[in-house]
Length: 473
Ligand SMILES: [Zn+2]
Image (cartoon, rainbow, N blue to C red; front, side, top):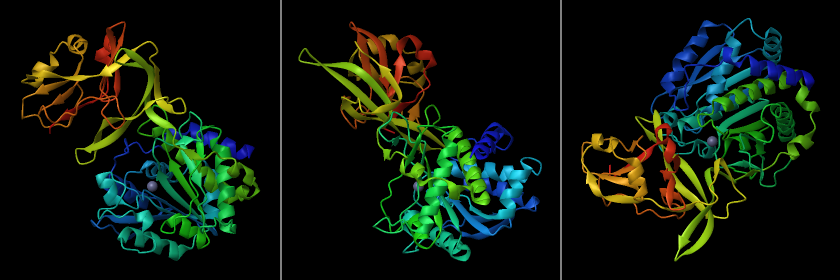
């Protein structure tokens, strides 16, 4: 194990040499990865095949390397908005492409393993940055019915290979925590069950040992941030069926990491996890790992929120109530799903002491009230940019009306919400599911405001880097 940890640290420290720098954020598309795949043909260790087309006609590729006896199949992004592992696979291709680096590790991998990789099983979903494919079918619920070309392709590749190991690579919600800790479940694992009884078959046990090995390595980098995905049997899913048919399947889910919405760090962790796993399959080392590691992985729980404002006072009929306010942000795709803005909603109000925030602020001694909409219309963006914010907030407003139809966007970077139609903006309430727009005061003086869930210190409005919402568009 000591040697495996050393290799993992070497991979960690040399990562920048292999990181695929053209994939700069999670909304990369099929057209971004095709040239990267085509380039692999310039290196004879890779075999590149097209194994079929998506509904919209995008090529799905199978990349193979190595000549060993043990077959390993890795596939990513069955869900189009779950790209972290896809990016890591391209880092891994760069690792193999470079002939000079890590010669011993490469020799171990390529002589003992035959590695087969399908990056981006769902390119049409990736195009829209949505979970499902373009006819709205969840590919990971289509192994029985085989209605989608993408699911058929994955099943055919599997049938041809009957791989010893499979890696099913996904992303999971940011709201998962590692057990009841304050840590996000940054990586969650599962050795999927082959039946409703969750029978411990030899392939499943093999996968559990491999996961134990991966967890031991990853604990070097992200201790306390690893969890176990629910092992409920899903008869329509790929991992569960592949396990039933004899493959040791590892489900790997990339979750959240504080301060890293784009998951650059978790992509690096994926890269280390996958190369370490391949290395321990190649050496056979995983077989010596104790199953108790797998058994002791905390469960995925849902105790994370994006932002928690703690210990606020809300007043009603002169009586004060102490509340925490939990806020989550949804990503809304724009510009052909190449970019996004954030839209906040109140997740919960009250005693949120069992929850943890990606960000938290203790606002003890502050009172909170809903931000209102100023009942006077502005006429241009230029006018809004010159607005006296301190005065606006002091009057209790976080939202303004703009009677200018030329406005095209759904969001802005001004620290106030804009509505193009007085009726389009919901009345502000401190209530679950409502939009979090607040005025926060101490001794009757406004100190903070919350606009679309972003906390703004009114002394530092200029440094605000959130986004507000434009209603009525
Ligand atoms: Zn998924």
